[in-house]
View 1 (cartoon, rainbow, N blue to C red):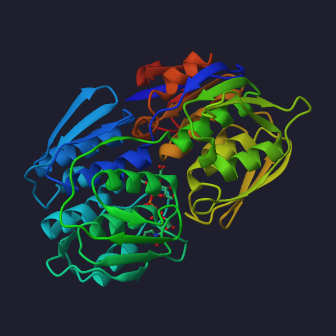
View 2: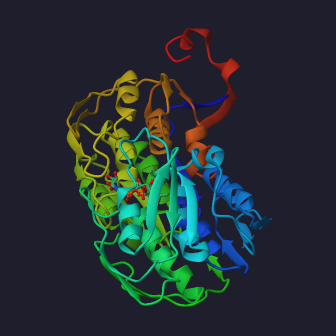
Length: 436
Ligand code: EPU
């Protein structure tokens, strides 16, 4: 297995170009199943999660090709309702297949997604929405079986204990677009990825209003057609590079983004002293630099959009470790998403965990160490910490990183960081025992 070796204390500088959004593209692959015609998705990031999704669609019977590095063509003329467990278990986002399969085939047999290291991730709200639309749902040997032959439009409240659900909202929308009558989703997720899904569905002929608000109305149509759609930029990737610049106190330009998707995050960064200057009329790039008199500690509470994204909490935690003073990070979406903390402690950080609050006493010297990535965003956090640590940091299990960041190490190298993929055999013997 490969590791990532980072030599710290290098200030990054230059330009980085942001890829398409993973979490927008994944449900869009599923949405392509809503028609028997060809859909072309552009600006799709080259990631292992995307390749899994392409493989699942192929196994369902769709013709899936990749005519260019970031472009996929999907023609699902004849499809089956049962994605294989072997692929579905590798990726939670495969739950997004439920809505399109039920809408198009009136039935689905989708394995229940497995456990997840970032915390409990039930699918009760996805199923509730389908049930309220008249679907018959049973669970047999770990497979969710849905009979959608009596699907009808409905008025649904789709919020849960932790607020709205992103992929649950995507599923409910996709189930409704081919269901005649008007379905009203209250408590819907407002994430830009949901808005982008609705933009794509509208190009396919769907009638949707209210996307981006908590109240979405869908007027079902008989049939949808294929379309060409360009995936929005990845706001989480963009914010990760902004924090990479901040952590090394470097100066970089983050290009090809939509700054309006970064509202709550930008506010916290600016208050802390991380300056984000618009650099062009198109407003699709930000010049990132830091206040010369030092950064201030910050408090964040993760919440559904437009709140501070949970997908940036781990990286913000790494950043807070480098800012003298007390920062507090509260998780309201996944209260146990703190697997990065024991690894940051190995590097010399001072962080204590009280319930869903991480209390960071920042400014302690960070030292390189072998660390283990537990999930996608934790791996980014450890790499960011490695950028500022003294000496070498070795990040294990970087397959998590490859699920969600296109060419992360290459993009960092282009910014001057000393980051390299190395085989496990390159690990110094003294670094082997605690992890292996
Ligand atoms: N929830 C329920 N019941 C449900 C569904 C969700 O209680 O049926 C709860 C969850 O346990 C959580 C909250 O609702 O506490 C929000 O979960 P949500 O359903 O919104 O998460 P998701 O749709 O499964 C997407 C992203 C995640 C991101 C979350 C939150 C995709 C493919 N995944 O997951 O992305 O963390 O929204 O913003 O869009 C990542 O990219 O690293 C990642 C984990």
